[in-house]
Amino acid sequence: MKNADKLDALAKEIMSGNDKGHYTIPTKGLYPYQWNWDSAFAAIGFAGISMDRAWIELETLMAAQWSDGMVPHIIFHTVDDSYFPGPDVWGGVGPVPSSGVTQPPVAATMARQLYLKDPQFSRDRADALFDGLLKWHRWFMDWRLDKGAVCVTHPWEAGRDNAPDWDGPMARIDPQGVGEYTRRDTAHVDSAMRPTKFDYDRYIWLVNMGNRLKWNQQALLKENPFRVADPTMTFILLRAQRDLLALGQDLGKDVGSIEADIRILEAGCQSLWNDATSAYDSRDAHTGEWANSISNASFLCWYAGIDKSEMRKAYDRIMKSCQFGVPSLDPDSDRFDARRYWRGPVWGIMNMMIAMGMQEHNMPQADELKNSTAGLISEHGFAEYFNPLDGAPAGGKSFTWTAAIWLAWASPNASKT
Ligand code: GLC
Image 1 (cartoon, rainbow, N blue to C red):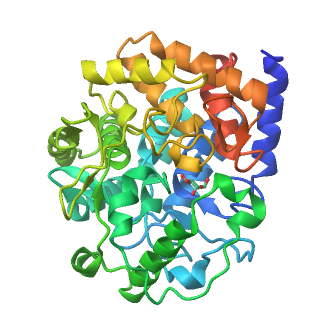
Image 2 (image 1 turned 135 degrees about the vertical axis):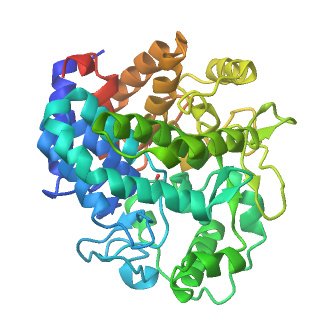
């Protein structure tokens, strides 16, 4: 591996280059705003640089919380024409201009990581965020459950924009009236690495529908044809609830409702078990149909505190079939595409969460995954994602979350920071 100290310095440089003072952009050009789960990862990246800056990242995110509890997936602190769809298309109804959907709630887990790293410094900051995090988690429990599993109402909510998990439900949408629009993403990145026009038409159609309904969850529940119970949201919320419970207990908060929510979500995880693939899978909440997709989100089970021997077998099989894991889709699937975003490539943040879970289950695969991710980044840079077959970097460059997970986890110096 190249010099770890040099890579640490480079990672810090990337984070400070993307730092806007009170929030961080994922990368220049392609993503010029604040993204929800990106910020939670940025926070733990900042933790080794400045604990104060780390908390500010989460505080800015939570300040964008809507009155119903939702925390939006994009926060438009400025107007920037290099990104589409912008604030006018979304019509978010929160305290600051934002999108109208959420993203996986990793924030409570990362807040707890900050707290554990420096409880004395963090106590008041964690205390101030606790109620907002609880309210956000409650919003999921109130509006998004199907058999106890958490549903997404737009593919962007899962953070796995074009995963094959959404193919069936997306194909049922007729994107009538979506009209003309100009994509900006393909001006920054090779279109072979991005979602297709078929997907984009439907992404925009769903945004227009939400805007028209003023993002009212009751109305969306009735009208939205896209509602998919998914392992990303379900495993991540379950983990976040466990972390919020532990944090709340340390802070002397009333945590009464969280334990009951954990039981509901545990049952929800089991409702995502697909016997046909012997793995955790996404399920269309409207039709009950399975996606039949073994993805990197399926392997977040350990992160959620759930172990299954079948998942261990599937993991070992998949990791043998590519040079770098964890691929976002099983390479044996006929929908696997090594370069296209969430249909094959490796994502560092997913690797970190998968490894956190494996570590907690004493699985030797945890260290292997950490080392292979470190090797991938040291050889191929701080890219947005990577080709699992040859490690080639893909998507945006100088990416905040890749730098953040390097500093907080993958770097050989990580535990020392
Ligand atoms: C893409 C990713 C999403 C991420 C965003 C900003 O949309 O799919 O997970 O949050 O970019 O990095």
